[in-house]
Image (cartoon, rainbow, N blue to C red; front, side, top):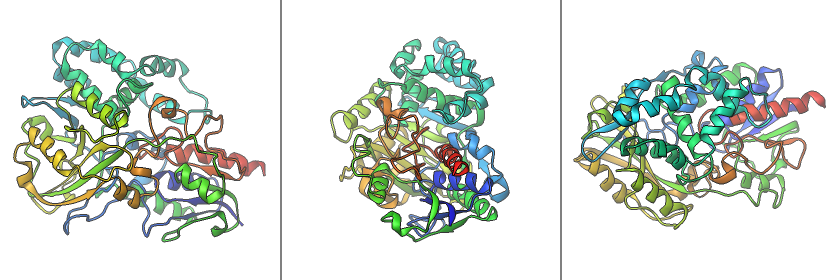
Length: 469
């Protein structure tokens, strides 16, 4: 009998398996698709030689993850590559605000009235970033805070809505960039703890950057798999699990799946019926005949580029999806240009480019033209550079990754209390009604992103049970 079986070979499932195998437990992973990866994959979606990341591409939380940093993933081929600027937010006048590794450079891009405000906002937390990120990504109750005072100060700044925090700024440049940071989790700007979301992304950029993985996000999953194999773990691909009886006998079962799928497989009935799924995304991967022709020079040097004319436009796009149930026009876009840091992603002189906008959950329309009209506002001539497109709306994303229910790449709404308390209100969020069954996906704390911490935290709950039995 195995000690543990993990269902799902995404970053969280693989991290959970690694953590258990490191402690001497026998582990097997079962993945429905033919390759490992989940939200960290790389494929030639458009043309030969163009290597795209179908899901996550830039990894501010991955490079800062306490789980990943504790593992020897570099030995197994993972290399983080950094663009000159982690992120840029261009404006219609051809200028841009930036999120730089340097706090001073970032503050200067906001203008003199907001530079000091921004420095006072982020500088107290930066010297304690490694401890702070470990504390808030380990909650709840998986580890005692190492620095409870800093964590409490961060909570006071971040738990209110982001709109409260941005009132400190005078000018639109700082407000717009910060609104874009919050929009990464597809939550309305006035929601609970959205200030913390923006702060986390900003601090991550200053502390460790927003890198891409050399060769593509698949390198993260491949490194975890290779390390797991060296530890004696086994990974089975092309193995779909429809019920618990499909799995071999084990002392514990760990699911890197949506709560919906877990309830169906394990026969939990309506146990997760209160769990909410959030907006979906409409994503386009591009093969380009050269770099994106951004008007703002800073955007040409950035790995990630946020697209929204101002904070009002970004807020309206989020409200259209979350409250009005319609696709926004113009949309807020998150884009990544991996080739700025990693020229191996495309043939010489060419580029891969990744962009998505928010749409209602399960939306079946086509946002391609709307997205490209928005891009042309900030990069005139963009369409002339397009060699090929790979388009995926919510149904397509859900078909690629079953955890993305209705196209929700966060695997559950990140608004209200569910931002922090997921998949249900519980002191043991990784446990289930069955004492031997656990959940470790992004539906559990600390939530979405390629960082492995949900798997790391769940593994702690699993090995405590295994040691007791």
